[in-house]
Image (cartoon, rainbow, N blue to C red; front, side, top):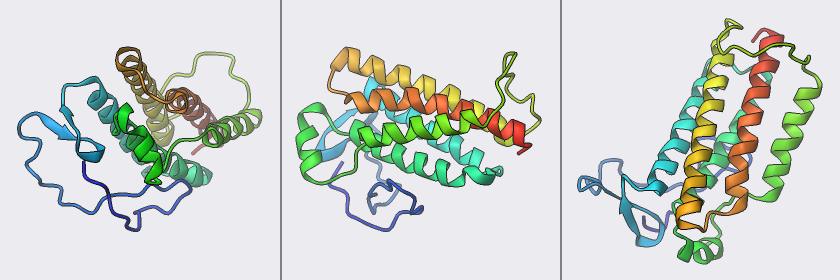
Length: 199
């Protein structure tokens, strides 16, 4: 993956990651390989690419949630989606290129971002009645809540892929590993909150 150039992102939410101006149709993946940052290439069947693909899927599912009517959660979801772009940028960089990634000024998931996730989830949880039974996905009759539960499940799968990558190859920053765990909690809490509010 060549060094990306700056352009205005589709969303201007907090944590917006820089994206690359490029044609979608490159034919560079026809051999089963794909580009990473700084000219590196890996197999599409690799652990790293599985992690990247699952995080991309997670972002798409969150997009379904926000498109189905996210009420007062729009700002939260927008920030989360932009943070996922930053997270993907970090994973698209091999450990030996991590220092170069930082020197180039590309966005990263920071401890401040983790703190924001925890504080946001905690604040909403305090305002949401405690459950006395299992939360059944879709039982609220809300597509928004159902998509959030789907996002929670995909976040858990993304976390497993990232942890497997770290256990096998090492070099995945702790903030990246912890972010997905915290994010799945936030998706669950948002779904329960929206169910109470009748979203």
